[in-house]
Length: 485
Image (cartoon, rainbow, N blue to C red):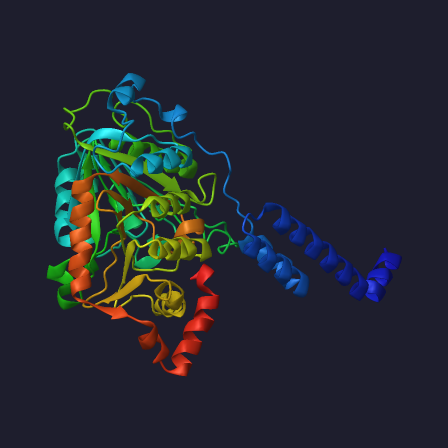
């Protein structure tokens, strides 16, 4: 023992050096073998090599994707919905309800999403909290069998408490209620609303709860999905969290704008499969039976709207939204309209948008004039020149912050849901979006975006050049960290 102590005392620098080399080599090999993005691989290899002790530790904490690659099967494990019903509402030809070019888009998305395009749905646009929360409350209060609610942020404020109490009341009258909140998003208000829900008997869980002592491990892997499903037959989804800042009567002149959607029809089965998938992953409880997946439905809307869910996240669905959007841009013929609160597309999307504009397609991109995240706003400004110089039109909206996430092509196809056009949504977050093959909704969203454009300011290369040097330098420095904002 004495000889060992003397050996360690004498050679400890050599031992530390050997351990650091071994750890750096192991981390570098793991990054090179597992990262699909060459920039991420190069970045992590550089970090672990040039920071021999800190680099491998940092990589172990935040660089490794610990999400299981094989989770609950989307279709097979929740195939309560009769296959013959799916076949009856399956849409094979979208050209008649959208436009001929979107037949190719459907084929692409058939290979990206595990879900198929289903018809006979209804979809209704809801403007901000003034329309969304009363509709959600009414639906919760009318629930008879089950309620499934998933949100990134569920604040403990006036609106949050009202919805929480409605969930508690539903649980008390015998409705099965399950609430899933992201573990990071739950911390946006104090005390968290989870206490109120749990005290009221509502079964509530936090998605990707941090491991004790390793809180950073899952900090980047967030569930950004927003879903409310009533009795397995009615639903709400989109980009809105649950918080009072979206309600005019409460926030008054500082109200935050947003867009949400009420959906009915066979698409609800896909929404419920997504929720059940995340719930089982989080709690190990498998949701099954007709309370969650009914076999008898209200009469389908005829002809209805063809819809398809597109889940994405840092698991086997990574890159799904990215692929769908790239496909939509490739088939665009006349007009692409985008509204995004956090617009930080990667090089591939920038190239696709630029190529679309150079083909003669009008590309309008609306970003907020007032952004709630100043660092994100700075990073956004740093790369707009790459789009403007290729013919894309970028508009800075006036008025209050708008959290809407809207994407329409040729007035015939839309992409709605929780995804922002930034690295976090495209690669790190668990998101849920819906493809909509429908002229009516696309034109409604297009008119909404055009109305915003009418009250916006066009950003030009000249206006970007006139920014003070220190502002441009700050924007570029922040932009370097954009993958982690």
